[in-house]
Length: 187
Length: 130
Image (cartoon, rainbow over all chains, first blue to last red; front, side, top):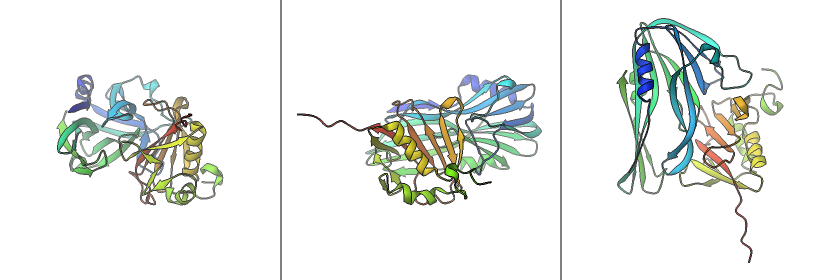
């Protein structure tokens, strides 16, 4: 059985921990174009620091196929370097201006079973949720090949994003089942 | 939006459903998928002697009437369709160096039967000579 882990690593988790109890000033992202998604990256202004959330493809073993698979990355960045992933696109600011009370990660586990045998286990970070004084802001990784990031504002987002169970039959091989499950992890 | 703002100069914003009938005249289309199945159903292959031209032609036909943006550093292009489908064309995929087109229907209200898939454009295998 092969195990693949593309969740946030220790460094990224430490960076996120530093964001707790600090002011979420704003985020900077492409304007929405019909969907509530932005391409590839956005900037987060938290306290005196600036961060970038990227959803970027890298070569991975995708259930036996070598493929470009998208992975979320959270990193500190100079504010001058926050730019769109698209040419000729001016990002716009969305003001938050609220203290971050808690940060949650939606962690996803995918388990592939072929002819009754477990062949792959994949662990990935599906979303970050910043819980402020009055609402939640979720930044969600898109489908496996896509570099889009979905942005959702509201309440009870932890529940809405983690209540997801999926089962796919015979899509990855004959007599195969892929199980997808999510859990909420508090940073 | 004015005339010329949609890809191909159409006067209306197209959905992917608007383009499926036309593109299926040029490329194999069955049960919502284009081309031939790879090992995994959602990964498809379209074979050609000129993979760059074929990839561009496929991408242009399926995104006709959409709103196109260029990815930074010449990596490719992406187009948003009126139903919410997002279609991305990459010049080179890391996996095998071939061009690829992704069709993302996650946000689509009506994909016209087209399914979520990633299409690689592959060189036709040469005939063996005896």
